Image (cartoon, rainbow, N blue to C red):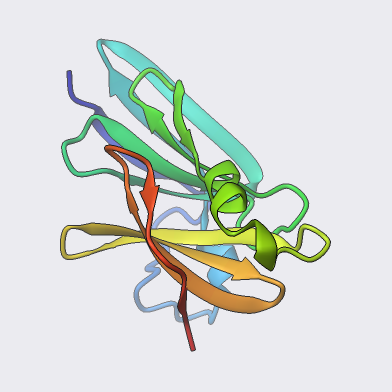
Length: 147
């Protein structure tokens, strides 16, 4: 079964994000939610602290980052079409890179594809990194410093 009607929800209306004539910040351009249909049922996830989400290749899972840039309330996960969590990205990161954390200062900020590889952007102790992630088996590759 595939996910359909995937849509990001924001309060910007017809504002052209690509031109961004009002010079809104990256944060202000983020969505407040995401909605989709799976197996004939409608789903929605909202967060006033913003959301970034993408429909993964294969259209059976969604990658979600809630409260990007927020070290306290940040969440990142891969969910199935029925909204059940398949992978808790923060938990996987903390298990793999536990030696890097000082005062739990970590936030996942974005997720995106480069060609067919899924990447997450992450802030650890005020340094920007990215890593590739395999949503099929939960494998996290090494951290790459982003400059």
